[in-house]
Structure formats: C-alpha cells, structure tokens
Length: 199
Image (cartoon, rainbow, N blue to C red):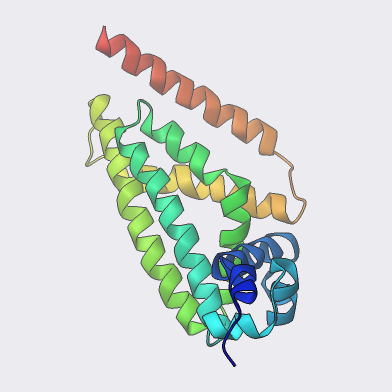
C-alpha cells in the first residue's frame, strides 16, 4: 500500500530521529535499553520504520557510531590548527556528551564484531589526529620528539580525559578535581610559554 502524503510528511526525517533517539537512550540507560521498540517510541515513529531504515539493530548502532564519529573527528581536526592544540584535545575528550556514548559503544563492541571493527577504525583515525595535534604543540616548544613522542603525549592527554569520563559514569570522582586542576595548570603553563616565545 502506497504511503499517503500525510504519512510521508510524518515520516520525514524519521531516520535521523531514530539515530538521535538511539544515542539518547544509550547515553541515559545504556546500549541494552536501546531496543527497536524503545527507539521507535522515543523517536515518535512507527516501530516498522526502524527495520525499514535499518535492516538490523547492528546497522542502526553502526549508523549512530559513524555519525558521532564524523562529528567528533571534525572537532578534533580543528585541534591541529588551534592556538592551544593540547587544551583543545583535553576539552574534546572531557566532553560528557560524547564520552558517555563512546563508553557504551566500547561495551557493545565486546558483544558485536561489526561494532568492534567500526570502533577500531574510528579509534585509529582519532589517534592519527591527536598525534598530529600533539606534534604541533611539542614542536612549538622545541621539544625533542624522540624523547617525548607525540603519540605518547597525545595518549596521556586523551586517555586521562577519557578515564575521568569512565569513572564519572559510575559515580567515582575521588581525585578528579585535583587532576583536572593539575592538567589545567599544565595547559596554562604551556600556553604562557607559547605566548612568550611568540613575542
């Protein structure tokens, strides 16, 4: 049976709403709560549309992961040309909107090979961008890149930030304030050194 103009209008943008609903449920309740029925209800569409746009739930999860990855990668690319590349990396990786969703995808990847493969591809691209941003920052300080490899420095910044996000997700915040303040002092020191060298 053909769709009427009214039903077409109602379903317009349904794919995007389904993806956003999935991301919201994953952030709020975890990936296991993102069932086709729950996602459809949250998106305000008919349940059948979930499988119309996404043949399997894995296809839906991959679409959500890819959309979030592209948005995150676009922000990370800006870090390379930012005034303070390391601070930009820190801010991106401490953003709870993405870190909480990323954590759910890591958990889901333990059970779904297709998600694991997609997450690995994303992580490799992230690592390349973060390393490039760290290289820019370290070269600006004339740091010996052999002694302080940019990939290692970028991992220290990014993994520390992500660890804070993972612990916060389970309610563990002991030492977080002190660590954040320590990182901020370090980033301020880096920024002031760069400004002094520029004058």
